[in-house]
Length: 449
Image 1 (cartoon, rainbow, N blue to C red):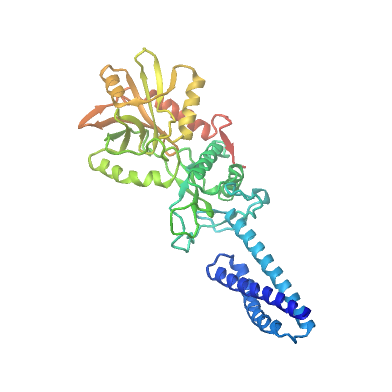
Image 2 (cartoon, rainbow, N blue to C red; image 1 turned 30 degrees about the vertical axis):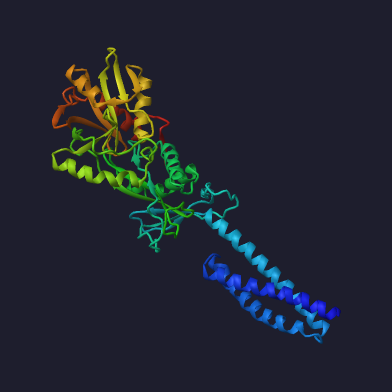
C-alpha cells in the first residue's frame, strides 16, 4: 500500500515534469530564451520527456520495487531543480540584454585598431534593472555598419554635430562637448532609447581624435567634423521602445561653410511648411526632424532661395532658418537696441551656438538680449520703420550666416544685414572662432590631449 502511494505521487511529479518539458520546447521554439541557453534547455526537455514517459508507466505497477520509485522521485526532483535554474538564468540574461548599450567609435580613414582605457565603460540607464553587463568601446578602421536584421528599429535615429579645431598653438580642441552630450541624452530619452554617460563618451571621442589627429586640418578655416549617432537595433517589426541600441561616432575633415568669405543667404517663408509644433519633437536632434525638411528645401532652391524660414502658427512666428537658430538685431518699439531670438518653447532646437551667442551678448552688456516670439508682422513693421539692422542664422556648421532677402507671400523683403556690413554677425563670428581655434583662452574650448 505504501508502495502504491509512493508510485502514485511519483506519477504526479512525472506528469508535471512532462508538462514542463513541453513548455521548455515551446519557449525554445519561440526564441524567448537567449540562444546560449536554448541548447541546454533543449537537452533537458528531451531528457525529461523520455524520463517522464518511463516514470508514468512504471510507478503505476503495484509490484514496482521501492528502490525504483525512490530513484524516480530523486530524478524528478533533480529535473525540476534544473528546469527552475535554467528558467531563472534565462530570464536574468534576457533582462541584462535589455539593459545593454553597444558602443563603436569608428574612424573614417584610419587603418589602425585600438582599445579604449577601461574607464570608458558605458551603461544604459533607461531600464529599471541595475545589474547590467556593459560592452566595451572599440576604435576601429572605418567599415560598413552591419545591421543584418531588416526588422531592426533603425528608424529610431538621433545624432549630434560637433567639430574638432586645430588651434594656432597646434593644440586640438572641442567646443563645449558637454552641451552636445546633454542634448543627445535628452533626445535619447525622448525616443525611448537607452541613455549613456556623456562624459565617458567625450573621453572616447578624445581618444579617437588623438589617434586621428593628423586628420584635423592645419587651418583656421577647416575642421574635423564629428558625428555621434545613436540608433535602435531592436529586432522588432512594430512601433515599440527599443531596448537595444548602437552608439557610434564618425569623423571626417570639412572645409569652411563660406569658402570665399561671409556670404548672405535668401530665404523663402511659406506657412504651409511647418518644421515643428508644440508637444512634438522639434526641440530634439533626431533624424525624423530633418528628413521632412528636404523637400521644402528643394522647392526653395527652385525659386531662387537657398534656405527655408520656418514659420509656425496663425501669426506666422519665425522659428528657425534651415537647420539653424534665428537671430534678429534691431531697435525695438521701445527704442532699445535688442538682440532677439525665439524662445525654447518646445519647437526650437536648443543650439550650442545659440546658447553661446546669447551668453556672449550678455557678457558684453551693450544691448538688450531677449528670447521672445518674433512674427513676420514684427519683421515687416520693423523693416518699414527702418529699425531692423541684421537677421542671421547660427549653428555648428556655419557659426553665423547672414540673411539678405526673405520671400514671403509673393514679396521679396530686403534685409539690410550686409548694408550695415553685418557688424554684429561678423563680431560674433570672430569671437566664437577665436575661442574655438585657441586665439582666446576660454573654458568653452576643451583640449583633446
